[in-house]
Each structure stands twice: as C-alpha cells, then as structure tokens.
Image (cartoon, rainbow, N blue to C red):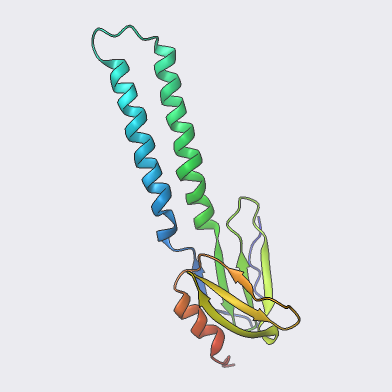
Length: 151
C-alpha cells in the first residue's frame, strides 16, 4: 500500500480526503438497485407463487454484487484518495485500489487554483497544469499552496 512518508522536519499543513459529496450518485444508484431488486424478491415471496428458491437467492446474490460494485467500491476509492500539503511538498494519493502517490516539491510549483471541485497546479517544466480531481476543501488547499511556508 502506498503510504505517506514525511521526511525529517516535515509536517502536514493540509491533509484532505475526497469530499463525501462524491458519493451522491453511487448512493442514489444503491437506493435504485435495492428498490428494484427487492421488489422482485417480494414478488417471488408472495403466497401462491411457485418460484424456485435458487432463483430467489440468485436475485439476492445479484443485489449484493451490484451493491458492492456500484456503492462499496466507489466508497473505498473515495476514502483512500488523499491530498496532503506539507511544508516542503505536495503529496497526492489516487483513489484506486492500487494507489499511486504523486509528490511535487513546493519549489517546483508555479501557481495553484481551484477548478471544478479539484486543484490545478502549474509546475515548472510542464506545459500543462497537473489536475487533481475531488479534493476536499479546495479553498483551504489553494490558500495553503499560495501562502509562504513559515519555518
């Protein structure tokens, strides 16, 4: 697992994970999937129906798979995503199950700004800014990147 290793005399100024609002649509999908599939299970369970129990259990298993795929996996990805500004560098961990950590020294950062719920960082030597989506409290992160480091 990719962990943050802070160096000697290095401390975190800002430490953010993805905002909980990134889970809005996965939650709505979970409600929709649960409602539809459990209506089907309720129809199968009503008196007088001759439905094989394996078919009913298959529908419940399908619900569990879809709930895991459409809600639990996005939840785990969202909680694993992390953005840290230290007094020496910026560390960003992706939200994937095999995370990658990007490290950008503060001396290499030309400018930073908020853009569509994320942070866009202009780095010397790159023709385009590096964009980190779904960063929590972007105003605070942008302010931490713009103000000088006090030692």
